[in-house]
Image (tube, rainbow, N blue to C red):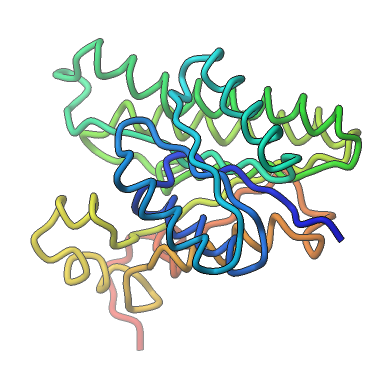
Length: 255
């Protein structure tokens, strides 16, 4: 049986790297996309290849259609197919709605929302032509539904991502292509550790599961959604958050 192939955007570090590792552990060949961090991408590649899987480095700006087309063409040419597209690349700006610059708004929407649209569209076209279906998995956030103060560009992009996932799932289901969204909770990675000097200490008490998440937690769900075990699951947003985004504000202590 031919090994399936996945492309993960923004996989040079953090959650994207963890997803790439998880797919390789499950026996997938993986294409690792990066935009500026080539060193990180090659580190990811080395680990994947050490697991006995093929790995292609795919540089590209997800917000530019020609670069996404070139990236996906390289994946199918070098690895033989595209069976799973994971849109993980993203950015955010810490600024209030009154202070956020137009330039930062445009950059975030371009990367997070337009980039996911382009990857969905072009990967979907390839999967349709291949004729054997596939999985498209978008990486969302609690910001899909919760207002994060001073992250207006990020929240707008992730709210749009939720509807993009649903519409794409409804349109692409006829081709056997499933489209889902995985929404992480508080995940401790390089970027989030920069947000707080004690990231785990800040977020663990707010999370019903009592801990922050790890990239492997997200990878586990992505691997499941990419597999045949989830062949009847589409159009869903699944929160991998230890209950963080389910828990409402409540002024009384639980017994």
